[in-house]
Length: 434
Ligand code: URA
Ligand code: CA
Image 1: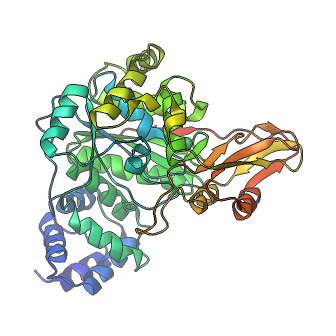
Image 2: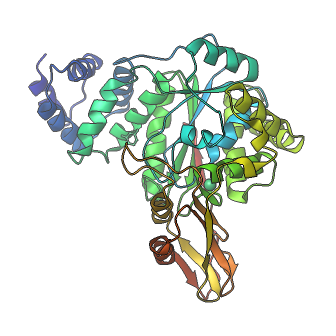
Image 3: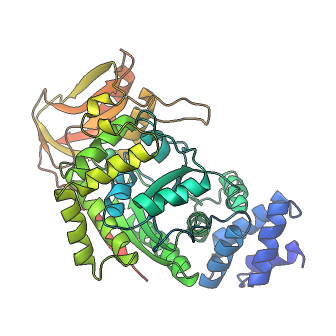
């Protein structure tokens, strides 16, 4: 087989066979096929697309390019949740303990990553003593015992995707739905998921800005999952404004505690109940979505969800007393209020720009070397559709430095007030199951 013939085939819009896709991914991973040929191929894919079969083949070829996590010693159906990324997305911190509390095994491998705030592990490290450097065997034992554990990323997972993603980044081929869908799905499958619930964000703060594109990406991922034997469904959720109120690491841990107590922001609570119901249903812990939701609501109400968070934190060395006393979480030295300059209604909160403001305070990493300040961030006091009076606080800024003028400027520029009543955005734009 010659790579040049395969590039030509794709250039002319023909379908690559399973053998051909395996040849490409194997050759690219071991270095026998050079970057320039794969660049040409990804550009051909960008313009010609991929068939459903090609997408499934590409996904599995990338899964097989490296290690795969074996979770077979964990009892039950392992359902993983994946979000396509947003601003102040506290769902993972809430969903883990929530679904574990009704018996769904949560075996989470998580990373740090770049962004407006840290990743799930960074957030959890706001809890004193909590650590994710545990042995595989302990990880398995903890999930069997408590139904929940988180382990740091280890092993050589989907090296083909790492290489390909980096190449796409510099060849203007990131924005290709088949390539995005297979990239995301390959990582979930290699991490051992039996079933997958996807939270595909849409709006200004999302990877996909339009509802049309978000739906197409969701459909592409759901089809890949179902074609390779992993039950998969997707929820399309709003990211035109940040989710919940808190954007920041310790601040989001506090927000997750509130939500598990039943006192969280309405949008975050609703999204967690929706995603959680699908997880419980796919894990076969309920025979309908309605029953699944009732189980989750009951668990919040009777305190089991909160109790599960305590068990989870303490079993990995964390100080679970923060759950009853969140003032023990890292605290910022200063707080400032962003005061409304006039009366009105909040009509826009540009999610990614507000996220960047949190990053300026130190809540996230701009580069791999940046050090996160776990205490700092933003808490929105108002969301789209809310009324504000002149002088009232729209956002509380938690900072460890005294001068936050640049942050305030950014927030004023990206939070719009109008005199006419604005509508709150729809939170859930649809669900895709086939
Ligand atoms: N996220 C991924 O993991 N892969 C892509 O290709 C795009 C976004
Ligand atoms: Ca939040």
